[in-house]
Image 1 (cartoon, rainbow, N blue to C red):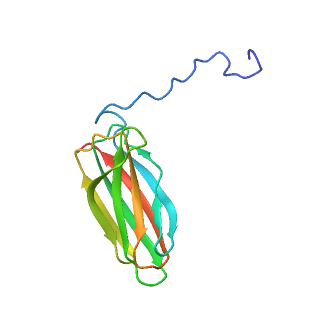
Image 2: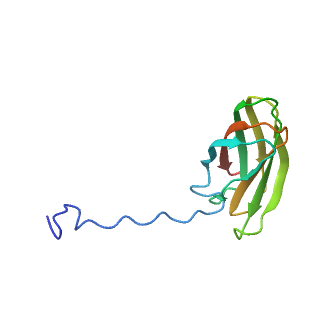
Image 3: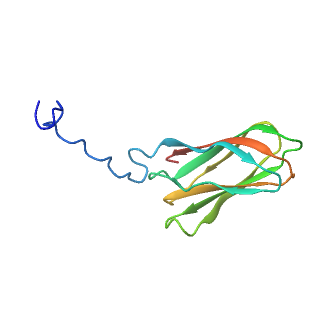
Length: 137
């Protein structure tokens, strides 16, 4: 043992993760957009910006868990390269009942980050989980 008594004191440092290359290593991945989102009636929610890691395509899986009455929620994917200015991409999605809805695939994406905007249009609280799957397409 050397230094502070740690047996790892003389071992080399683990290098930081390499940057992603467009549709190269690490491009295919899954990210949780919202683990549990309670969207109150007539509310709008914007997710955090999610890195694409070089992937040029993605799909969103929207799991509607429950709703307090009729469910009518609109979803719109947005993308950015600067983290400030977001642009709508792909076709809007719609959840109208409990179960799974898929948005996408949205291909030809050259952006560094995406986010999702959800708007509850029926005026009732709804519970969602949303996952984004990134890949080379």
